[in-house]
Length: 128
Image 1 (cartoon, rainbow, N blue to C red):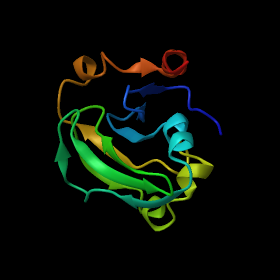
Image 2 (spheres, one colour):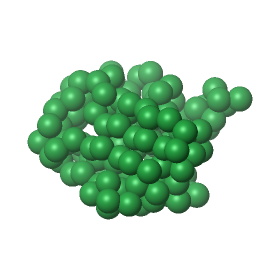
Image 3 (cartoon, rainbow, N blue to C red):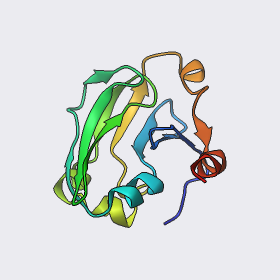
Image 4 (tube, one colour):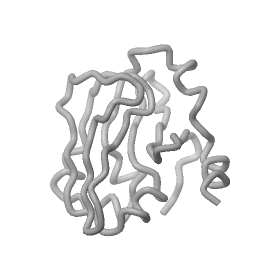
């Protein structure tokens, strides 16, 4: 599984990827997906919904457990990955390219809200 270069990770295992056009992609890190095991269900919000940093915005269920997914920065949902809802196992195959969850437009101070997110390499070190 390829890890995108430009991602930031939260301590609750969500990733934030800058799309370069003032939108961001949010999803689960490969570590989170590995810990969950085989994903069987995914619930995502509607387009247009707004969430504050730290809010629960989605739910994922695997054969092992159900987990809430938290918004890494405040934002408005502009796109939902319906393919991931219909076939949640794509998260197990590729949580970054195919298994992303939502795309957002930030609604808060994006620089300030990103301050506690980790570069992927630092995130991996935190896990060890």
